Length: 333
Image 1: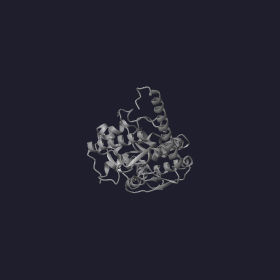
Image 2: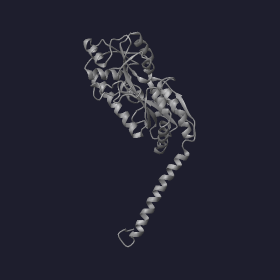
Image 3: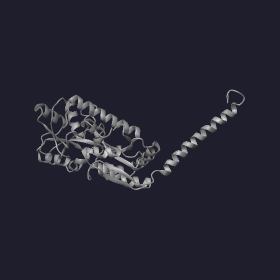
């Protein structure tokens, strides 16, 4: 029909009705998706053993998420290979939104850097839903250490190159990368002492076997609150609400220094956008409730995001660690 002839009025009406019809179809499809998802229990895959921060976080959100979605949400621990086994399980799961990874920086941005090959691609095989929290790292000194500030720590490393000990929960972790990044920015060489988890490292720090440590705040916050460790700095750009009087490394002159452990939910790639939207909306509602206060009590900084924002965070972290590892020529067995 030629809309520039005497039928132009009819054409305009046709255009309006076509637009209304398209809008109704879109609304109908979203309504149908909302009515049909979820129709059975969901699984939150935790790629680590029970008891750690990621497992606890999954259990904090599982119940309110189930209440909102009207279906059970089961926490399923699948530890192994530094989080890779659980991540691979979700990457290969059906793209229907029922199998969800509780994904952290480990399998998403650290493991792709330290492992020569992985059974998944963290940027291609997942459909991010939303972030949940970020856990700051803290630089702490033991009660027997003479170090009280970051300036003293750096000065000590400069006076004793490669001898000032800095513990971490393991080689090839975010904590380890944070130590290397500080040494690089300060132009000093620390002696990195990796342990198998935060627990053994914290015990050695208390006993004076190591002088300092970089750790997740959630793992060491109990010791800090008891006054057993000296807190030198936090590694995020903003101060932690849990430690409002502790400066950031950025404030102390290491401009742009930022490191934390990100945590969020991801489905497998190809999950319908309408399903992701339903899940994102539910997570946002959960994070507006009591769950956020529980996360703050653990030393984490809670916060939901859009899927696009979560994707950007993963990509930025991955690039940050790729550049660091290449620059320092770090090797991992």
